Amino acid sequence: MIRRYILPQMAQVWTEQNKYQKWLDIELLALEAQAELGNIPPEVVSEVRAKAAFDAERVEEIEQVTHHDVVAFLTNLNEHVGPAGRYIHYGMTSSDILDTGLSLQMREAMDIILEETRAMARVLKSKALEYRDTVMVGRTHGVHAEPITLGQKIAVWTFETVRNLERLECARATISYGKLSGAVGGYTNLDPRVEQYVCDRLGLKPAEASSQVLQRDRHAEYLSACAIAGCSLEKFATEVRALQRTDTLELEEPFAAGQKGSSAMPHKRNPIISERIAGLARLLRANALAAMENVSLWHERDISHSSVERIILPDSTMVLHYITVKFRGIMEGLQVYPENMRANLERTGGLIFSERVLLALVGKGLTREEAYEVVQRNAMRTWRERVDFKSVLEQDPAVAELLTAGELAACFDMQEHLRNQHVIFERLEQLNL
Image (cartoon, rainbow, N blue to C red; front, side):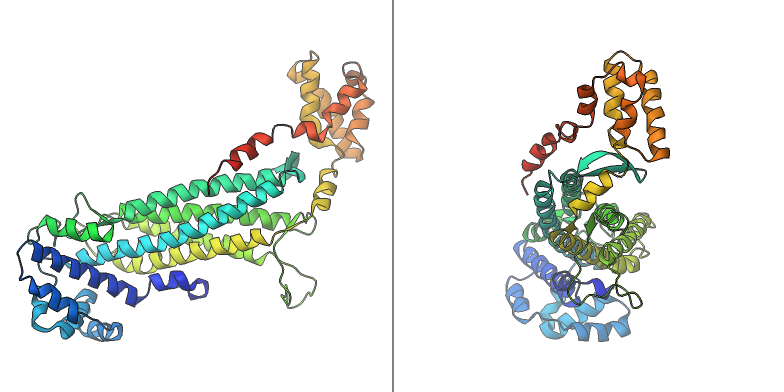
């Protein structure tokens, strides 16, 4: 387990106590179903329920001898129940409780992730609307492109987070299946109605067909959804990191009182949380690949997937929950520097409006190629001489012949450049989070 990154709510999901409790719940429900079908005496259910208990430490002690976790659990359970325990696990195989219980744990973990992801989406939406008019330069290839707003940038993140919510919800549905169909999935010694009874009461669906196990494409989809959500968080965090660089400094992570950035350099304020998010997201992608490797098992089952899942399922859910919480914290305390955004906008002397000049010249009758050559020629001079782009254009006879002073000035009107962004925010406001 990646213990440093476990938050208490998620940690509880993956405790041995929680796992064994789910196994016990399944066994007791199976007993009820068998009694309803007349396969065991009805009084057995009440007797077993009254006595059923387990001790996680005792189960571990027994497992040191049996080298089989389910057998160890059942042995400990029968130590409490006594003779009536002979009806427990009747007709079932280990994977009937292992996989059904695991589905319950995975669903429980996903519910925590979904709750936090929705909370983060609400923060993103709020920040996008707050900064809808905060103008900054858009960058492509790391080079200044055209003006955007910080609100637009965060709106992109918000809609991506909503798509991640949809993927995570689909993954929750995909894993919300159980199986109680016996050693090779054919219900040889177990009535299918037992499976239906148990799954109904656990809020699961019975697998349409299973081998000894639930098929691992379900688990692979689940961890793939987690990995994609992690990719998005890495992307958002990487943008914060890039915009926190000293020579840019448009955004900055929260920096707490008493926090230290470097053991050697007292001035340092490093984007350590964003960097941590970027690093941990790599684990989610690696774990998703491991889950895909688990899909192919020999015949009706082998256990090559089992040891892997004991690591990748708890770790992936814990990591995704953790980095989601952390990025929400970054956004809630985000430091924004509009004055630096304005200064960076102006660093290229107006080159960020080159496309509007190009289109204005095309509108006056030049071919696109002719207009491009005129604008690029003046843009290159602006780059070389570090002069004002608009002034350079005013001195070019080819421009002056076609554009009036007012028409040229309109090409550099920031509000006109951003006039259609309201559409993005109207869509954003419609999001129900």
